[in-house]
Length: 264
Image (tube, rainbow, N blue to C red; front, side, top):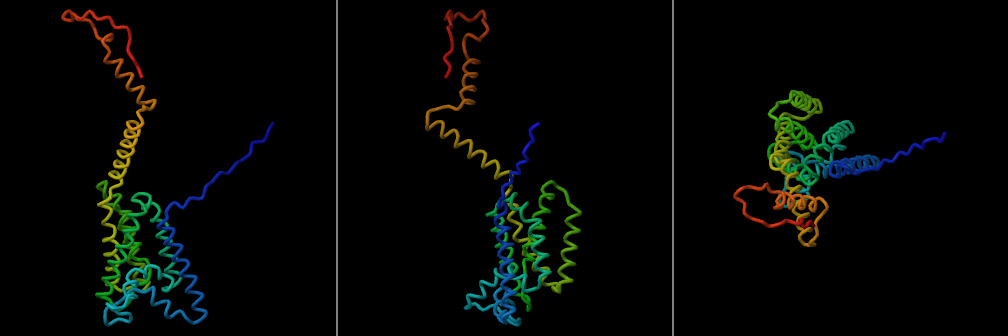
């Protein structure tokens, strides 16, 4: 009896490019932070990945300084500055929620949501807080809202969303964040997640289907050729409308003899 060979054919897929790229960049920055800490040059490195503060804070926003504008976005990669526990907590939550949201809304839309959430929370922090934001907390908040919107679209309020938000707020309190910064992070996540209302997956699927149908029709018209399914449907329509299939009536004086129907 011949033995059956067991073939394990698995392909590695970069399924969520935006989420995975964010995690990889955060991990690289974490490793650089460790290396620079050993050399004693970590002070300047930490300032790059911390959001600006108001004028009374340690890193006030300076209009003429390009670095201040970069800090409005780069702080989301600075979770390693806040410690390994904060980094791993953020990355685990992002990896759990990000791929599903990216598959639902698309990589481009998720990228725009991340940009808007980070920028909105960074600007609010630069206006109202004396301490810098560090880490991807607005992104985690945004993905929690996106996950909840899937149930809101079905006219349901998930209790799991309420429980997650309570745990999320408690996590930020125990990590040392102030009340104003927690509100800023939630506001940034909510602002970024509002794009979900503008990009319905069902509408996107219908547009894609209509484009593909239009492309198929266009190609058949341009080439002058019909596919097998179109030929079969066309033949059935001709056969249905053929005079030889019509029932005779008393009022029908047409004595035409039908020999056959031309089919393509």
